[in-house]
Length: 179
Image 1 (cartoon, one colour):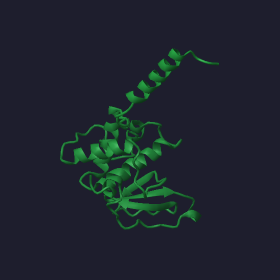
Image 2 (cartoon, one colour; image 1 turned 90 degrees about the vertical axis):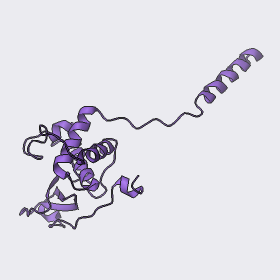
Image 3 (tube, rainbow, N blue to C red; image 1 turned 180 degrees about the horizontal axis):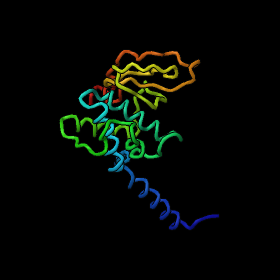
Image 4 (cartoon, rainbow, N blue to C red; image 1 turned 60 degrees about the horizontal axis):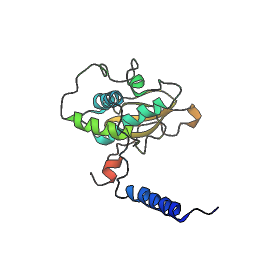
């Protein structure tokens, strides 16, 4: 079918305007985390890894997100963090007041946008690195921020029975040169 010349010119002009209207636009910003999720995630990081490191905070956040993705735990960040006897006492009610709060908020935002600690993989549990756990189903995957992170496995599949040496400087921010 042949279009009249004026219609063809109008169609071409409109197409060009649409293409040009998108020039110079920035890529969309990553989605901003919901305020409640950000508060709950920052609380878990702050009270479990405060005064430690960004790596430790991101590792805690990775465990929270692994739990959210698991059918064995609540399906929301706040549901996971507020579970009884799972995180530091008072995690949902104590005040966050010191200089560790900005780091916790930055790390929480980053984890909620998709960053994960590269060594945590599927781990959904952790305890203080100084604690000695006498269970035969604990497979340790990382130690960061003063916590030892682990997976629960059938005893025959456990190959790392002791916490690993602490490693720092592996999270996204550090790998990009501290920006």
